[in-house]
Amino acid sequence: MRIISFNANGIRSAANKGFFQWLEAQQADVVCLQETKAQEHQLVDACFRPVGHHCFYRDAITRKGYSGVGIYSRREPDEVRTSLGWAPFDDEGRYIEARFGNLSVVSFYIPSGSSGELRQQFKFQVMAWLKPIMDQWLASGRDYVLCGDWNIVRARNDIRNWSSNQKNSGCLPAERAWLNGQIADDCGDGSPQPEHGWHDSFRAIKPEAVEYTWWSNRGQARANNVGWRIDYQLVTPALAARVRDCSVQREPLFSDHAPYTVDYT
Image (cartoon, rainbow, N blue to C red; front, side, top):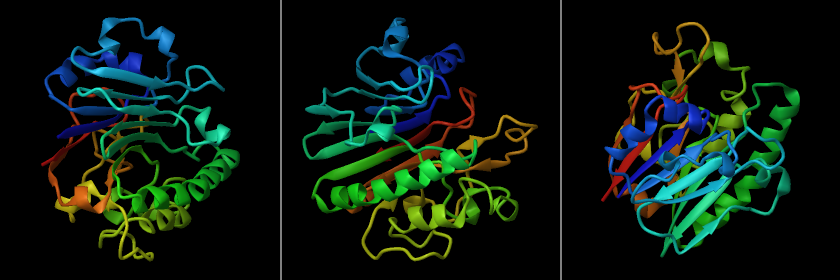
């Protein structure tokens, strides 16, 4: 099973850069998109309904051209969910879940706080509200793959400029403690981690690797590989044991993020 997670930073922009031609060659079973920045009625071109896939979108309804998530799947889901029950989050188009038997694949777009204090406080609200939901999923007995742009790095190996970003959104100690506090591995920042928890699919097979999934558009960040790893597939323990391979597709350039692919047995 191959799952791809990708923050498109505008799905129409990514399409113009060749994303869908690239995707056709990937033979993915499920594709999770974030930041589509479109209303579904604007996606009339056939490329937005890739051949051989069932396609589902959850648009932002509070602000057009903002946020938005989607899922493409080769197998038709038994159910698709687009709401977690809290309008401030749901209405920004930040969650969609496809269910296949005992497997759930989620596309998440966790808010960024980089635009100012109000959005940072909203991000903290989302984190506090989402934690018990993730705990419930973990204890449910279902297999989950939580794909998406989490807008948080985990540790020094996940960001080029660790020291200078300690006071910046996405690398704040409280954000890292929240994320690492849900992941059961030895690859965090030293903050407490659970004995039983989610698993970071990337670290499951690349515990020491330094790879990034996002680069600022400012300066020469991408050319100089001044990046952050903020795109994840967090998985339940049984799926962690089934991670066979993973890769970050830095080239071609479709977005300020790179697609993140995981192969599961």
